[in-house]
Image (cartoon, rainbow, N blue to C red; front, side, top):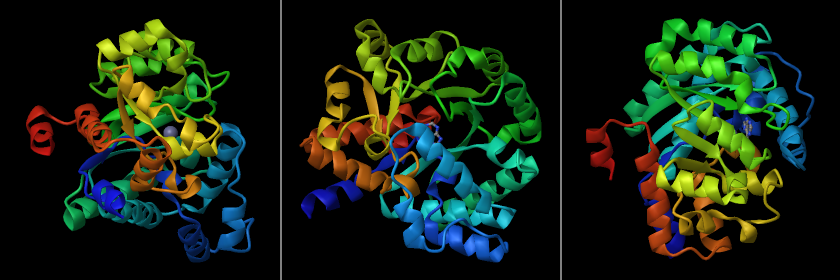
Amino acid sequence: TDLDHFITHLPKAELHLHIEGSLEPELMFSLAKRNRLDLPFKSVEEIRAAYNFSNLQDFLDIYYAGAQALRTEEDFRDLTTAYFDRAAADGVLHAEIFFDPQTHTDRGLPFSVAIEGILAGLAEAKAKHGITSELILCFLRHLDEEAAFATFRAAEPWLNHIKGVGLDSSELGHPPHKFARVFAAAGAAGLKRVAHAGEEGPAAYVREALDVLHIDRLDHGNHALDDDALVRELAERQITLTVCPLSNVRLCVVPDISAHPIDTMLAKGLRATVNSDDPAYFGGYVGENFKAVARGRKLSREQLVTLARNSFLGAFLDDATRQDYL
Ligand code: ADE
Ligand code: ZN
């Protein structure tokens, strides 16, 4: 349709994408075969049928299990190039992607395997599609502070290839302040700071992410809407929110797409963006996320342009490159 065409060709940046969450069942199967692994599933259909989540933890259990199919640098490169082929088809010009090193180092892979494979994929995507990218290292918040510090130390040789640090995994019971010191160390090393907050957790976690972690960007932020003073501050400071509509529906953060607050966020002056989070698990890449909110919330073309433009305003680009994209 006309709307689909408009969305596909809208220049956009993706700012909230877990590369491990782009592992499609077909690739999971072929990696398992290549690595001679036994998957707990017999078919692609059986895998997809298991993707029925009632909350964040339900999803995370399956997501960490799926990541076990990734064993070699080549696996991580193939994963990354597959994502960028999809992103190119969706009109993505720039992507800032997350990776979860602890998911891999905790099962014995050296830190180098994941990052070298991903970096090879990023270089290939630039050569093939012209897509620019940045890499954000996420700490798993269900693990402790010392594990995050160990991960940060392991990343040391690659810091010039890492734009920032993030915080993901199980939110409830793992407030941002648990990682205050490692975020301070990352800031001192010149890295940007982002954190998942207000996805399942309360507005108070968003407040902590701002005041204690000193984040440069907020991942999700849905529950910030429960605190008017917080919303005013986010709007005044023009903090970018990386919102993930299909993820929110699939993880029951919102009851359905017609109840998604994306346009409420815009109306309150928040710099909201649209992103895919874990597209292989949630039923669509960034284009599908735009289409879902465009239809579900009857967004105008102007609102869609604002959302796409916000993605470049919120990207960690230098001013000249940002101007080129805008
Ligand atoms: N890891 C991957 N996707 C995530 C999400 N939506 N929330 C928290 N951690 C995640
Ligand atoms: Zn996420």
